[in-house]
Image (tube, rainbow, N blue to C red; front, side, top):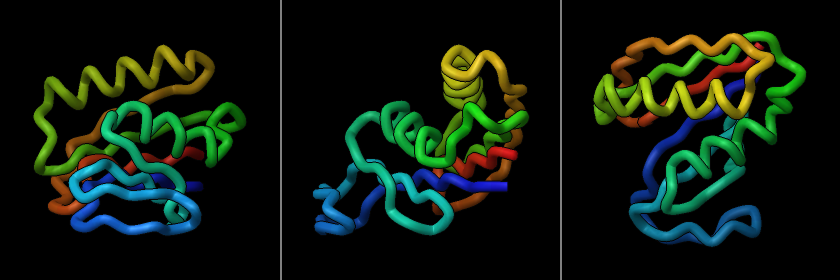
Length: 105
């Protein structure tokens, strides 16, 4: 199982060659910074590429307190379109600090 975590940067920084802006989305893959940007879908897609999602069978999306159910369903639909060969499940995780935690197995 590999994991991607999506949250919002609380300060500007340069990490692993990525220029992070305060308030931008950041994507961690297995605990390491892997993506950053203003568009959450782009950050999620970059993170999913890093965990080689095409080789996995199941993608589970846990959405946090800051994400509404409609927004989460729309995100899950976009991920399903990008990965038609994988099952995609959506779970209300309720986590306070991460907008999305995504596992691929």
